[in-house]
Image (tube, rainbow, N blue to C red; front, side):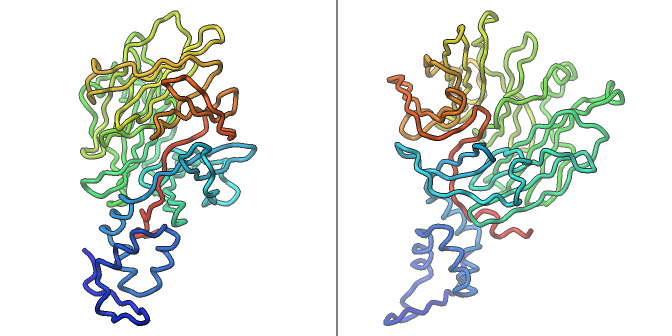
Amino acid sequence: QLPSKIDIKMTGMPKDSITKDMVMQILLKLPVKSILRFRCASKSWNSLITSPGFMKNHLDKAKQLLLLRTENPVVSYSLHLDNDRVDMCSRLEFPIPNEAGLFDFIGCCNGVACLSSQYLQIDSSRRLVLWNPSIRKTLDLPAPSSWAAIDKTLLGLGYDAQSDDYKVARVVRLKGPEYADERPFAFQFYSLNSGSWNENADVSSSLANEDTLRSITLHGFGNPAIVNGVIHWLLHPRENNGMLALSFDLSNNSFGELMLPECFDPTERMAAMSISVFKDSLSFNVLKDYGGNYVCEVWLMNQYGARESWDKQYRIEMLDIARPVVFRSNGEILMAGYANSQLVSCDPQTREIHDMGLEVLLDDYADYFVESLALLDRSN
């Protein structure tokens, strides 16, 4: 809902001739930094800018940038244009001074990032923070219920358009002899709308199988990928069962599993693996080591949920280890960690590799990012 009245003062033009829709269309063309200043123009403008409808419309018109998290030599975050040189637009100020290196970057969605501290709190859970760098706003999430001992944790951030809600999914392995005869995992999600954790999330029947659960090694490769409104984590392979992606459906709040392509030869050495988003589909990326010569395979899931629909999209011969991190709009693939620390852009058709002149390690974060007003209407 938009406010019924918008006040505006403009020399030489009657106030009544400036319609509500005209003001909205003008504001929608402005960058976030300028829009924030106009909140002070009047109460009606502030009401417009913080309305859900305006924030969604502004997000739809936002230009995609590239967000890089690098360590050279300290952790830093920067925004870049998706052009031939990946020119830097701005360097982001980390919201917690002098502690950028103490937080894991889980991922981002609609301009909102999820951060997790690397040190354990008293309740054995990690500090979780939602951060919108465009409006310089952070939200500390309440701690989930405590366990005496937690072994491994998976985290993912996503947005459910149906309920207009940001959710953080959390999977933890319980550690200790007291859990030997119980379910070894806890599945949870946090809803920003409700402001609380759901400690008893639904789990699919196949994943809830005790043998299935106990066979999972809860250690993910890279960052989660969101496709079809579902968060996916790539896990270590299960013995004799192939590669597995653990999933969380943001619309029905349920955890499940998704099998990855059967593309492994036991004689081959895997140097790196990851999942990502390619042309709005889930992709599985594997780097195979042939005695110092590397081949990067990109598999695409043409029909979501159907294992038989996995198709090998590209097979790229490379001279060094690198991890695909962004599938670009121009058809090229940004790869991190080439020759130890280079960010390169690879044309999968011509096999040409271009050095972007940036140091991005194999485990650093890179993905598309949009500046948004998300969280502007949320209380700290």
